[in-house]
Length: 161
Image 1 (cartoon, helix red, strand yellow):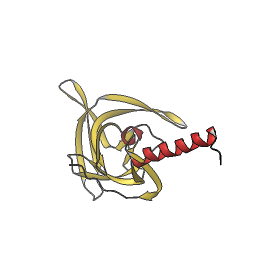
Image 2: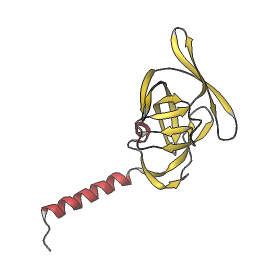
Image 3: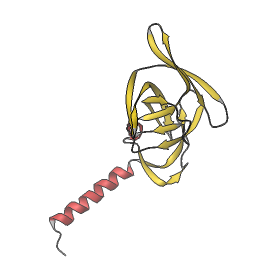
């Protein structure tokens, strides 16, 4: 059998894709994540369709500390507790939503652990009380780390030291 250029290209593509896939962990579309140094564990939806990460914030209040914008909000955990969090606002973002007007949201920096991967990422705050998952992890966190198995859930536990 003679190897054509098209067959050679296809073979090289498959081999290079496999090399990339082998370097990334495969995780489920829902996993437990922890907010590092806060002892808060949450079920998190891995959303490959979202650019950024969103976190549920109830009783969200903008406050001022030494002339800077901060937020204070409450975050329920998976065992019925509620945590009050205060963080500086690093910026505000406008989130486009289908069928309704855009929403302005404060953005904070948080260290999030999924599996054994710890990343500090920008997180926008919003009321996610009508959603099943209080934490939605977007591509800015997952990029280069994970492949998502849409048939699996809870395949790893947060383990970042």
